[in-house]
Image (cartoon, rainbow, N blue to C red; front, top):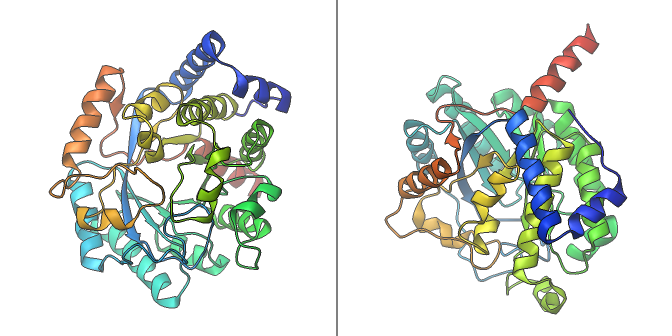
Length: 361
């Protein structure tokens, strides 16, 4: 179900504070309870590689940043992480990487997808987040068994998009939107998202972001606060940033409003929230989110996948089990439960897909 709010309504809600903000959060929590319940779905995050051919001005693994040690997990390391996730009751994994489109990379993702499905008899869901690709690549991965694809547009404003990317043919807003359209046509559960609190960004643009996601009829969303990285061009504009606390509250309001607008989609409580506050992810769940993505990348690689400053990192010997147990306790205190061994596919996608099949008859 979609309930359209006007741009004026959205601007008003995004600007609210105090008691009005609390009312918004309470209403979003009720809508969430009615439409997706108190289950929280797991997406075990595997940061496959920090190699990237893009040069986005906000990103710590951009091509021109020579500080990080570039890595690529071996196939064996990837499958071992998948195996541990499956044994611990994760219903899905997310394979994330920098944007890369070589034939070797395409084959590597394809092999991972096929073997994950084979090893788990199709029980483990797969989300891919590997950037812009050709439509035939999206189709290849989908036909091999990938269920979902997350491609964050980062902003629906073409003007702001140009300020966040180099002015070349590899970084165009139209190309990004066309990639989302191709994913939809291929048959994926399609996800996108935006950064909240960017330099130059306005409340009006954030309202447009919500309307954009409503209009393209997404199935899932991953969005969170913009956190700056010192080795990026956008860091020079940090004086224009809202305080972290304001970015955090804006992020919660974006989650709550999207839940009101799109009652039955999946919304992730993203890791970037925790870069500001240790309990921010749980707050996002309370006001509308229903997906979490614990990081199950081998610990030695995680320092190399720093998209932004202050990213939460585990102890050297932490393989993710401690984080999962802690998360389970905290969610229990909120009267929420982890949906172990459940893929948690988007109810919105299920309804849309069934309608599509009806239309084709």
